[in-house]
Length: 221
Image (cartoon, rainbow, N blue to C red):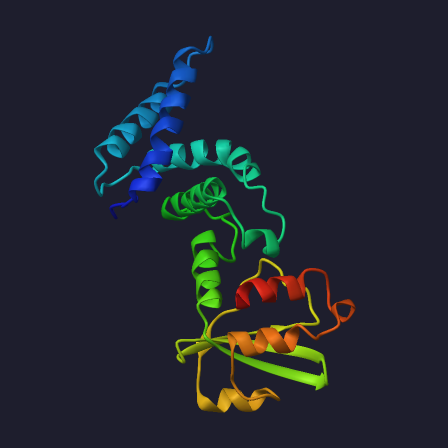
């Protein structure tokens, strides 16, 4: 059987949840099945040990169960409701986001089939870091002060594109390989962040969805 390897953060999340479930069952008036509480206890022993180990099928079921039982409350602690606010996320909210990632990773490792798809928050943090550290900016405009597309060039190796006339959401635009031909897809030559910021400062905000220019300005700082 394949051994499971949990990270230190995942182990730190699992241990108190397993202990809480065991304590609750021991104090419950209804005596649980021996197999049920035994699987919780042996799973806890392996979690405390903290090494790669083989988890039996019912032990993995217990791990899935304690995560699913607490997932909604953990998820509710993340109060960020827009991409704009995500740019100013606090250290406490970052911890919550990391905990949500741990929940997802544990479920996947245990073979749970109903894990949501899409990005992890770790991927989101990495993506935003690349946006903030992109030094080259590409722009397209249809009028003197009417810009409709922006590209962020990271280390002249990768770039990503945003359509300025569409809302910027939590969905991640992937960075793709940057080649010189990419510049031909934009109407203006490569700019520095400061140059792009000055050009966009003249854009009429009422032509853009809510928060779009504010988000771009933060990323260009």
